[in-house]
Amino acid sequence: MRIGVVSIIVTDRFRQAAKVNEIISGHGEMVIGRMGIPYRPQGINIIALIVHGSTDEIGALTGKLGSLEGVEVKSVLTKA
Image 1 (cartoon, helix red, strand yellow):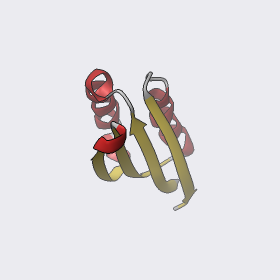
Image 2 (cartoon, one colour):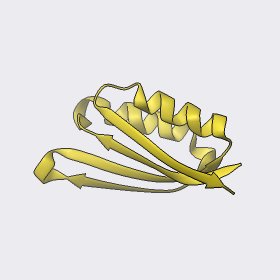
Image 3 (tube, one colour):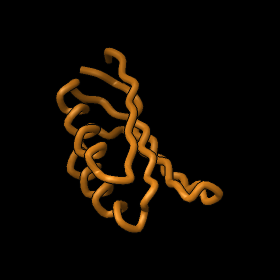
């Protein structure tokens, strides 16, 4: 099992917010915490997730999010 942080930057909020939230909710069992901040000067929204799960589970989450146009995802994981 891994624990870590997933950072999500959404550059097209109006088109992607519902999809991003749907994907995160679908993987909600591994989300420990979530913080979302709109950064209006740049027109982006930043979401930080604290996650706990297997490498495959976290990879499925980040892969689905990263496949959305206008969404960038990075993760940092360590052993739990």
